[in-house]
Length: 94
Image 1: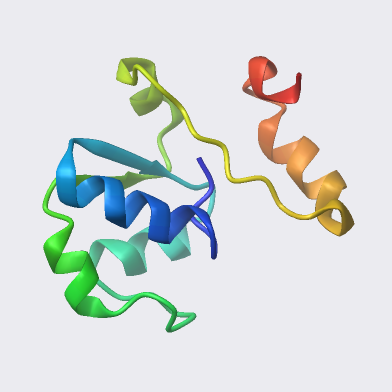
Image 2 (image 1 turned 120 degrees about the vertical axis):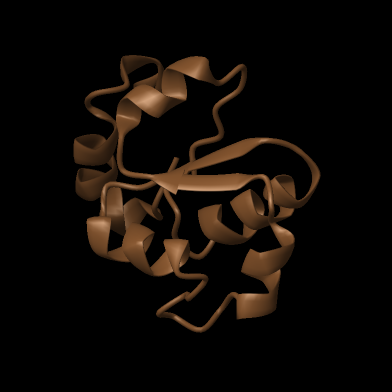
């Protein structure tokens, strides 16, 4: 959950080896990732091509099928944003 500068590269690496769902609230980011493009330039398009088992989505219901969820939380300066982001997933607030 969270496809930022930590979550996206992590999801890419997992997606090279196993079925992986990358979740983010930003439809703009997810649309770019589906095209194999990282607007920040941190992930090379070739990396997206190698992550053949990665699915990216803004649909939180897709996470219901996951056996494990990794939450990439923003730094403390973004704590209010992370609380908003995680509000719909109470176990992540603990």
